[in-house]
Amino acid sequence: MKKQVFKFLAKVNKSLLPSYSKRKLDLAKASKLQLALIGWRWYVTKNALD
Image (tube, rainbow, N blue to C red; front, side, top):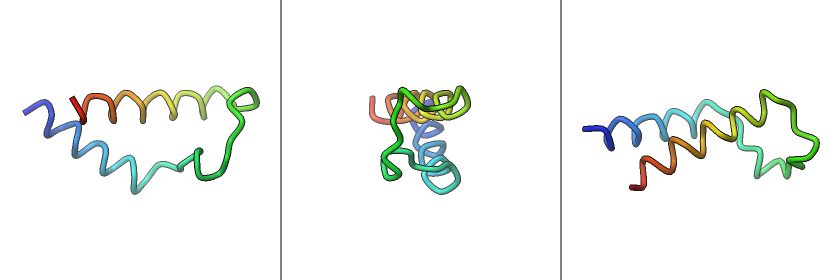
C-alpha cells in the first residue's frame, strides 16, 4: 500500500515539478525552495524504489 502511494507521487512529481538535473542546476547556487524540491523528489523516489 505504502509503495503504491509513493509510486503515484513519483509520477505526479515527474509531470508537475521541474527537473533541475536537465537544467544543469548548480546546487551551490540553488535557492532554498529549489533545494526543498530536490529533497522532496529524492525522498519520494527513494521510497518508491524500496
